Image (cartoon, rainbow, N blue to C red; front, side, top):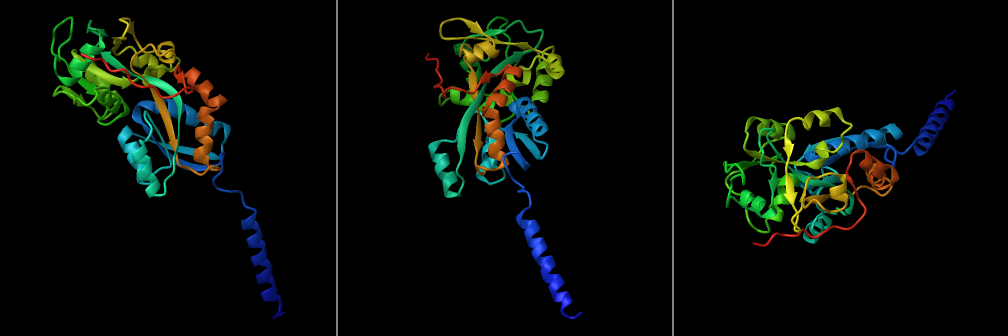
Length: 301
């Protein structure tokens, strides 16, 4: 009997080792739990995409943090997440700094949406030229062109994708004193409702899926501004004007991923750029991801 105990212990050890060796990997392209960051204006698309993905692959779980674009990019640089969804890629210098921290990223445009301008339902100033918009944003002439009423501009959040995109569009100029930001999209929409002469700036994805009851309700709360292109035609954002690059402020949605090639992060972003993900874009009335980044056409004065 004295020799039996060591034998049983050895047998148990071998059995446990065998079980551990053959256990299912915790992180695969279709299995695991990950936290990803996205700019707040992309929340509808990411919520729909993650819901669909985890429905197809029930062993996967995706948690999203919706924040400003700058915060999302900082989160990746700080190692808080391996996947983010923003409106621009890291610059060459930023990627060099990431590599110095042993972070190598893969970036791809998988969708297009647009920066969208909204006004109060009672405001009849619903057309702007790019020159007028630039003068409004810089404070050179912060009045409505028709009513001549003074106006203020409100973004969804400081350093959001909308905020950053329009600041870049100003080509080195700064926002004027009448440009402000709220902390969320819903707060911004409420502000536009309460202040008749406010110009609000949101992402088109928030109003693109017309089958969504939340979108239907949201569209009853404001009017969308038409923006003049360089040929003199006015456009409002929709799938056609974004896909055909008619609306002046269409922009890409990037995924930036540093996850393992055989991990869940990579599995999800490949899903987005693949056939199923691109079909979701059609449902959400967004532009497809195929194509290359464009240069922004600046209005010269």
